Amino acid sequence: MTESYDIAIVGGGPAGCSAGVFCSRAGLDTVVVTNDRSTLRKSAFVENYLGFPLGIEPRALLELVETHAREAGCSLVDGTVKSAETDGNGIVLHLGERSILAERILAASWSDSTYLNELGVRTETESSGSVSVVQTDERGETNVDDVYAAGRLTDTHHQAIVNAGDGARVALEIIEELDTEFYNDWIALEGYYESYDREVPVGVKEIDHDERRNRIERATDFMSSFFETDRSE
Ligand SMILES: Cc1cc2nc3c(=O)[nH]c(=O)nc-3n(C[C@H](O)[C@H](O)[C@H](O)COP(=O)(O)OP(=O)(O)OC[C@H]3O[C@@H](n4cnc5c(N)ncnc54)[C@H](O)[C@@H]3O)c2cc1C
Picture (spheres, rainbow, N blue to C red):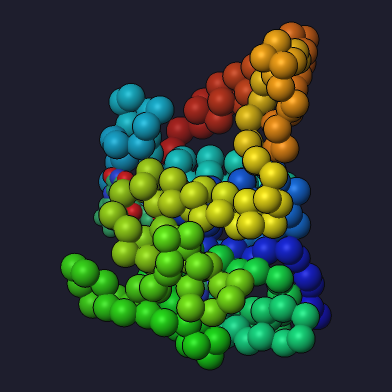
């Protein structure tokens, strides 16, 4: 069975989920394929991820980033990408019995790039170790058209917030390439742009005060109940 998407992201760590949030919010039909072995699981406690002043348990952080990707509209598929090939319609990812066809792929699968070999994606040895990392241009695209990479797999720093930011950055490069108009993923209060005599940019959603209050309440309820669960074991 082959499912098809606008973009398939391989890896559900901070880089892949962050890219997924931006791609989905831009209206791209997005899948994140992951075998759920983020490096972050090896951390005892994360104290340098902005927004958690006293730190956060790493599995809780991973659960939050995955939930965020899902809420944004990504499909999350549990599996390992074993190989990839191009066909006339796009790039096909093979996960054993299941195949996924996508117009573009984004590899965020630290520390596995072997499935990209058949596509001819260029790799090199990381600067401080022995893992093969993927070479990209400044926009995150590899030497193969429509194949992008982000996060630790591209030899970025070994910190989750940097890798999450990198996933977002590469996703925005892809989005901007698809739509050359100014894209901005923001929520603004109704009338904000009008007050500056400007059109509402692509990707900006305007909401009124009631809707703002609803969203704050929903988000606060979610976070309160999320952190009621003890994840210390
Ligand atoms: C011991 C230790 C402690 C750490 N502590 C901290 C810390 O305190 N703070 C901090 O900021 N950073 C810390 N890090 C680093 C942090 O974990 C990484 O920087 C971050 O997780 C990298 O994000 P990423 O999304 O690029 O890769 P990962 O988080 O590693 O995610 C990659 C994902 O790709 C999936 N994947 C791989 N291959 C495939 C495949 N073929 N098919 C499908 N899925 C695949 C993996 O299962 C995983 O889900 C620590 C790392 C270690 C080892």
